[in-house]
Length: 515
Image (cartoon, rainbow, N blue to C red):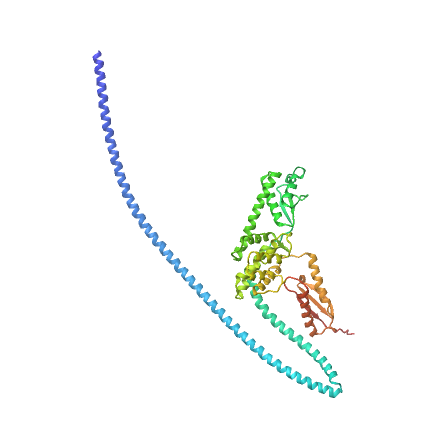
């Protein structure tokens, strides 16, 4: 029995060994088959990769050829366009040259006419002198008057005759000069304004801040008014909280302070935490933001006008003009517009636009100072530009823009023109009612001061005045002289934007009743 068991165990062990080696052999064959299959797959992948690579290579070559053809077509099109543009430019240059030649011929013809008229006038003066002598002798012989009395009588007659001739000559020459000058001036000014006109925003001395709801008013005031006192003390503005729903009002003559307060309050409302410590923090951040805005606005002005090499302090002062207004017109936008108008006119006249632009941009730089600095904005601006070593031509253009001094260069005249154009165009500025009424009253007072005036009316918002004269006291010749004298007096005694048209009206009526 024991031997049987032993034999069974041995047999089982032998069988296990046999099966072990048989399994190893089977796994080896399976592994070899898997390796062979993997090698075949790898070869197939390599072959497929070579085919794909060849196909991709061919596609890339075709694509590159297509791209080269497209670029070639684009280059040819661009060359045709540029050739056409060059041809157009050449045609315009030729047209302008023809126009210049025609103008030169016209000027030469006018000069010849002037010389001819001058000779004719000299001859007429000689004839008039001889006629005067003959008439004096004839008057003395006929009336037995003395030579002196005859002379006085003749002078009276000549004065009456010359009054008519002088009025006619004044009218003809004035109309002719106005036509020529207005035509050229309109071309230059319209072109400059079209290129350089900008939008202007009217600002007042208050800023309105909207609130999400009226409950925030109590939080802004704070316990015993601590919050509102903190805001007013740190910003220097007056905070007005009334019954107007969902708004509060910031009042101050300094727009920079109002801007700081507005930014701080809007951030406090967005944050929700309103107490003295947070208020101080927000106001400091708002001040930094306003300073950055000032710098950015100054750089914007330089970019829009093309002015370069400006001292950083001048850039900051230019940026401050963003927060200044003159009769509701933003001073920085006004300065940019003046610079561009002056520069455009300089180009049209064949001058250097850089001087005109720079002087136009800096012409109101003195307005960047606060009210505590004494002096007019012109004198302050002159001192400032001298301090930063600006050229004399720039200082002269800035100094003469209000007519305080005579312009020393043509560029200074262009700055004056740009300042007038920017300030007087419709919608650019506003004036107070009292100033407006005083200007109209002054116009009518000047007109009424002349002898023979029946009535005078200032119309068209003070841009035109109509004078009705008494026909028995003022004749047609005197009308022309009166209109000229009134216009000269208005120019000398009044300050106004743009121009004022003077119309003198004389009417004669004959009335009869048929019974």
